[in-house]
Length: 374
Image 1: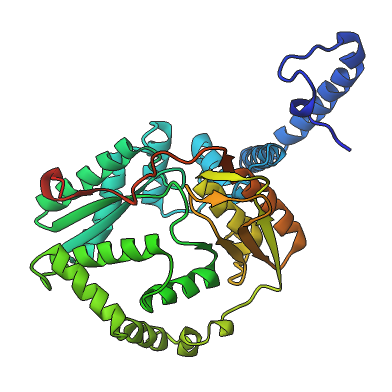
Image 2: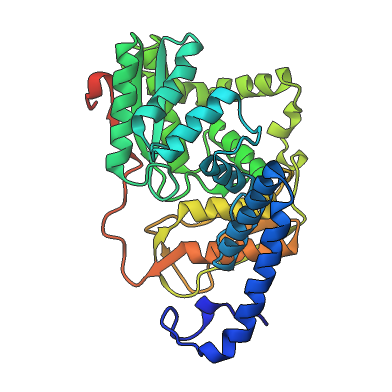
């Protein structure tokens, strides 16, 4: 079995004998010289492509050794931009803009993020906009301060353009709702429209719907708009409208009343709590990655998405758990993928001996025009 350097005792402090590796090192240098010589005969374009391919494989494989699964096409694209190579993946203008942002370290610039988001929304001709800005381990903006900064800039910029804009900073430090996976999330969405489903998902849906109806002029206050949303759900009108939307887009509306008509995974396995305690944290980003590994998303550009696979989460942060109690159920079609996903999912849970003293709020802030908090 292969043992990597980082798996050896004493890593990263270790010693080696120059005498023992001298022959191997000389052989590597010889092979390296032959490889460089061959690459020089390829011509500039093929040479650059060979370098790009080699670096891409090196990054992806090195990350796999450490348990991180990267999208090969995204890695290739990022390396190509840094090398100044045109790989035809983007429109010319986008390639230049992304390249500039990459080399100037402005990919995470909230000003450029704001411009990217709002330019598309404003081009659609809207008059009001409700933005859901996530914060936490599963969000692009990991800290609340960064999320608030982006939300304030979105709201202020939209207002300067003459639009009614509200940005809600909401929590994504653990998965919203109780599922991850295409068909599973559709089932959960239908449950919400029936007045059921996870409380956190239901609460956020009503909050966002309330602000949308209020900014759209349907209600005089957000509170009134939320009540209207609740009535649309309780009366069945919201579910009927969803059924109509599915039918108009060529889908099978029967799945709304019979979820078994949706794609079903062939196998399921349970992830149980290793001991008694309290769920102290659940790394949201890792849960999403585990779902991708199962096939619920693409690891590579050429991969197909399996709509049947996914994860059902049985406990929220702060819940008491007992040893052997199910924490999650993994629905899968490929055993090898399920093994990798299970390992990552196990690492995402942290069980503590004592209760969580302070739970993170679902809605951190609501930021309105000119950055006012509502």
